[in-house]
Every structure is written in structure tokens, then in C-alpha cells.
Image 1 (tube, rainbow, N blue to C red):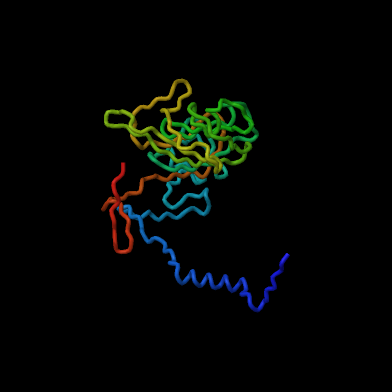
Image 2 (tube, rainbow, N blue to C red):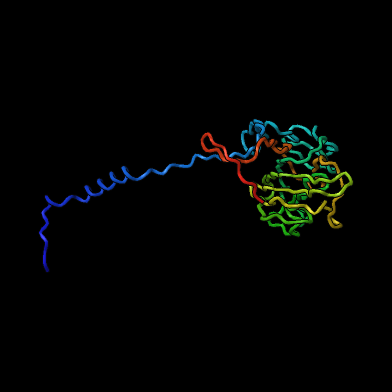
Length: 277
């Protein structure tokens, strides 16, 4: 085999070739520029309201209406037989309802089933959170079998929760509920069903569920026309369930006004987008 005798002094180094190639590329190759176009919605939005959050996720933010803070039942009707002990609201006789009515809202409520646990099925740690006639079930569902659309965090007699995240009896559970009230026209016809999203102990268990109507035990659900704002209620089911840290925030959509069609702005040039659909 023929061998070539290459002298190091006469062969440019690989590094030299690489440096030269990079220099040529930088000199003659145009550098790509990022697009400066900006999408313009054409909508002027109102400034979002400044709200101070609570010190933790359980504490009410600055725009919340506090329904129970561990002191008294002044925000509730028919609460004379319900007791406040050690900062907890304990179920008494009869359902209680808020003095104020609410429509679309965010509700935070914490509750604890009795310890020691007594009873089985629907007879164990039973109560409920109601928006008017619509119930999110409260029940001790920790190792306690019952019908699935009647366990904790179910929309009663309509749908079970996605998962069961119930804590042990005596421990505290939390519900964070996003409620959208149903709408009716002037003749009483349903135009928008109620929807609800529920987080149980921070876990999503109802995902924008569309209610079929009210939530009775003894008949199918149905809608009856009512005002958009109704009291929030807590149920007496003859079990001494405890509640604490109850607060609610009214929800209103952010407002915006269209001032021009959607467009793309590139520097000083603005181009309207073609209509689609």
C-alpha cells in the first residue's frame, strides 16, 4: 500500500478550516430575523380588579363574603339550633340558609364527619351543600359503601365524583366549588343549565358538570324557573357534621368592548385579518 508522507507544516489544521468556514458564513449568509408582527384582538378590556389573596388557600380573599368565621351564625337564617363550638359550626335541627342570595360564585367550605364514625351508607356523616335546590353531597365516604351518585362530592342522584378523595372520619375535608346558576327566559323556559366544578381536598372531582335539574331523592330531576340568585344552604340529616371556614365570592365575567377588527401589526404597518368562517 502506498503511503503518503504529509508534512504537518504544509497541512492546515482542522480548527483553521472550521474558523475560516464560520467567518465566510457570517460574512455572506444573511442572519434570519424574528418576526415583529403582533396580533391585535381589537378589544379594549377593562382592567381586572385587584384582589388580595388570603394568607393561605383556606383563608378568604379580600373580595369574599365570609359566611362563617368560627364566631357566630349571623350570616344564616334558621341557625338557632346549630351550635358554634371551638370555632366549628355543628349541625342542629333543620336546614340553614344564607341571608344573602348568590348567583354565579366560588364557594369554599370545610367540613368534618363525626368521630367515632357511626352508621353506614347514607346514615354516616350525611349533610349537603345546596345552591337553591341543587345539592353537592356531604357524606362520610371513607370506607363506607353507598350508591355512587350519593357519596361525598356527588351531584346528588345525578353523577358520582370522578374519584373518591375522602379523608378519615374526624379529619377535615374541603370543597372548592365553582357554581354557575341556570338561566331562564321571561316565559320560564330554561336557556342555560346550571354547571358546577368541584375540587375535593384540592382534587378535581366534578369537571364543569351540567346539571339535569334539581336533586331530589324521590323523583327525576327537573328545572323550575327561579331568580338567578338564591341562598346557599347547609343540610341537617341528623348527623353532627362540623363546618368551618365558609366563604363565597361572586363571579362576574370580565368586560371588553370591540373597537376595531382583529389585525396584525408589524412595525408601523397594521393589516386587518381576513374574515373566516
